[in-house]
Length: 112
Length: 111
Image (cartoon, rainbow over all chains, first blue to last red; front, side, top):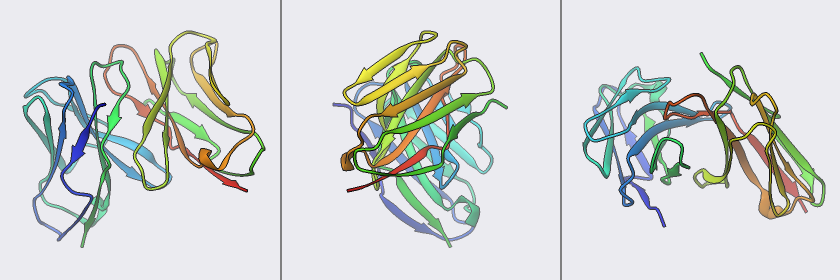
């Protein structure tokens, strides 16, 4: 079974801090994704990666960056956290572009 | 930009009643996927539809993809309390890797 692991379930940070969210998948998947989930808005794509060191902007990349140095790991970085980045962050992976996405349990991030 | 609209946002049913959620895209989709997210959980893949007019069934769940490949629906017959959760559709266009998710329909089932 595919396992997507996010480093933290809950995280509290302060405005202006640099925040790192880590995601690891164990199935050698090519594609990895970062979403944020807010009530009434569904899942919105922040960034995705289809290969090591490759990244593509999603629909809401402003204020975020990503890193994929190894195939199994995809990191989301909030360069200078702001209160409007308080949200649930979900990482996902898929074998290829058309395959189902497998999600981690999410990180609920609060920015104070 | 491309959008996938999903309605209703919320549905409350009595156990045993039927339930349907609808998705509409502003553009033609190459395929559409459906996910279920239980309360406190993460989205879990249910099914993918690819062909125009396709209908697929999983026990009490029936999934349809419209003829024009711009809309889709999920119908649950005789809901049970285990059906509780949020159902998301997610559409894909062309050869891009990314999915566009609908806002989801939250289903509450009362015994």
